[in-house]
Image 1 (cartoon, one colour):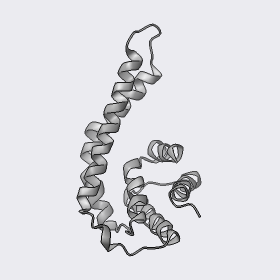
Image 2 (tube, rainbow, N blue to C red):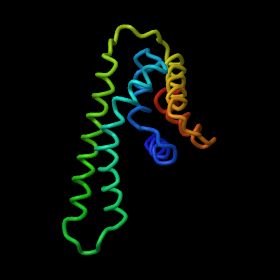
Image 3 (spheres, rainbow, N blue to C red):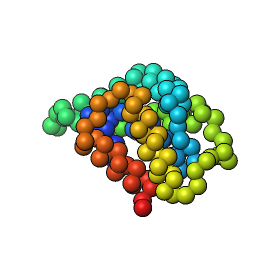
Length: 151
């Protein structure tokens, strides 16, 4: 699932936290509407653009441009990774707060229905982004759904 998420992030510009949130909501009985997806994207976009993405870029740059013998470089990269993960946890909290979740109002019960709800929400998210997914990208989305909701 991790590889599929990262490919969708890097190739298509999709937000991994939103992908996972679609699945998480489906597991709780919620299909996300187009309006909800738009709200969620608007809430996380500034934080993602100003905090998460720059941290990721710095971490990846350090990984790709390591200087042999430079003491502390790997420790710095690990520290930045921890900050990136902390920032993503805050994004996840923003997503939850945005919809003010009520766990008891779901309309999906069976695992197969949850998988269908996840696919509906993921497809809606992709449509809202305007991303032009290739066959491989749709397969990555399908593998994420299958990992979240095994048959």
